Amino acid sequence: GENVEQHPSTLSVQEGDSAVIKCTYSDSASNYFPWYKQELGKGPQLIIDIRSNVGEKKDQRIAVTLNKTAKHFSLHITETQPEDSAVYFCAASKGAGGGADGLTFGKGTHLIIQP
Amino acid sequence: ETGVTQTPRHLVMGMTNKKSLKCEQHLGHNAMYWYKQSAKKPLELMFVYNFKEQTENNSVPSRFSPECPNSSHLFLHLHTLQPEDSALYLCASSQAPMGDGYTFGSGTRLTVV
Image (cartoon, rainbow over all chains, first blue to last red; front, side):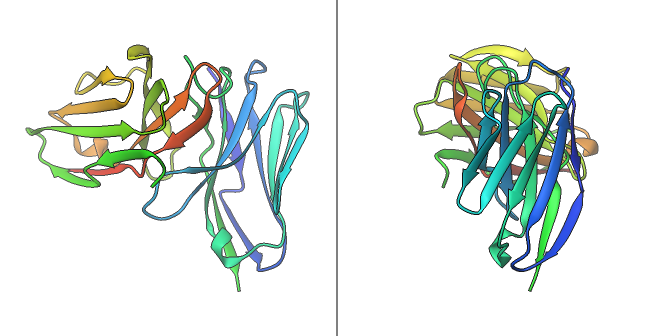
């Protein structure tokens, strides 16, 4: 089955700096890669996703890049703010994120924004 | 609220008890999922339901029993659990087959004593 590795497990950056979280996946058939943000006491919330026919996607301060050849994808957050502090999860799926397949998640990255 | 509601938010149960977790989605989705989230481990997919039919069971012990009476409701029936089953149980829904809008509830924090 699919295996998703996520690094780093903890990331501390100064407010205003950029943060980058990286994930690799094992199944070349995976075609959907979402990123989730989980705050304390809440379920994961989708912040951005990318499909395998696209190499990069951006939404304001958040961007995701995908390298299908190397089977890795990354989350980039620019101009970080205190409210960006949370646990971030990457995930991969073969079924475009639903249908007969659930998502396979990485272990998460605890992002800490230092004031 | 995300459109996926889970109850109860917290549950403490003994190893001989029987309890049920409930999930309801208000998004018009047709696929629903149960995930287990334990400390320092990835979210683990437990069960998948497509159009009320169970399509995936990731080797989950029989002490966990899912039920999906319709595309808006999902239950997880629990009996004779072990302390290691203590975790956050998350429900999610999406629109199959493309999976758009994969949305999680806030979860049920389960403690088995």
